[in-house]
Length: 150
Image (cartoon, rainbow, N blue to C red):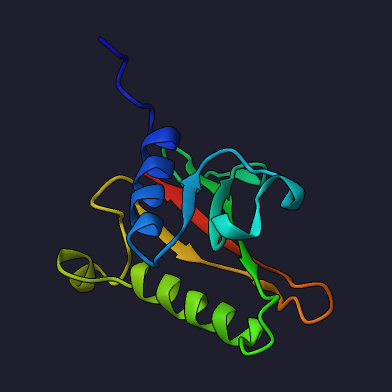
């Protein structure tokens, strides 16, 4: 029998499930980031969740802090086909992630995405990095996601 997941892992596993259904990935999502060289073009688009971002605590009142973790979604694409525009594929992926992380159902009334009730809120925050792969065929998208834990 495995131990129940703590709030951080439960939130990241829930985010992983949302990202899995957001797009037609050939590889991933996985919580282990790989180097570009370790992901063959045939396995792209590939998606990874990287948990090496910031974590913060905010104390407003009471004994329970508002904990915030940052997870970066890394996406690798193959943009070597001259008929394909890497930036267009990255835009489609970004649109899919926007839609997947938009509030829906019960979350719509709350005005936030709770990843099926796991965290208090999860949202894309900050500036995504887009490298369309025009020069070498290796496209990259890095999307920062902030998760506020209950």
